[in-house]
Image (cartoon, rainbow, N blue to C red; front, side):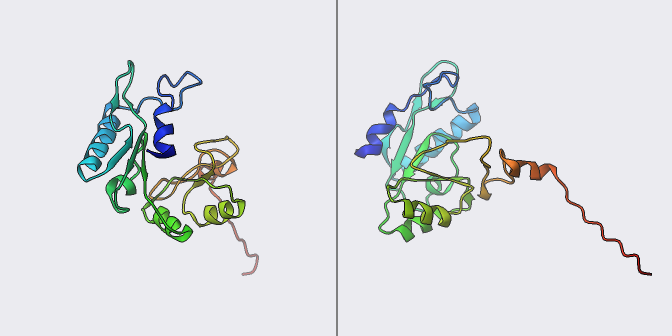
Length: 180
């Protein structure tokens, strides 16, 4: 099952107002159905469920188990689409270059995550990833001073940080010549 497969079932799911909760409910029944359908479809296409893979019965929301899927090709819809649910796909790679190519090989680029103990690799790979934010040895840590937003088909503009103000700013240049 591997380290990831052992860790994911222990991720606290529940009331998002409780500090110990890591995963809250999905935003709506429509999103719940989308996530459920994507996982079911991936399984039908041969995905191996490493962890999760099903709905979670909790009161007060549309909960889904944290899910890890493996054995899907890189161009599979579950791999190459933003799921916006607690679903992670895992693909093997042999080289750093191959990993970067796989990560950049989708039309999306909201966020990326990298696990490494090599700080030079962290800088090199982070610079090469086509994503709005890259988390190294962490995930989903946000601060109001750090700009957040995607690239490619993953959004427009930035939230947080001074860059967020750019969407409210319209620069105008006026050039006046006093010559006739």
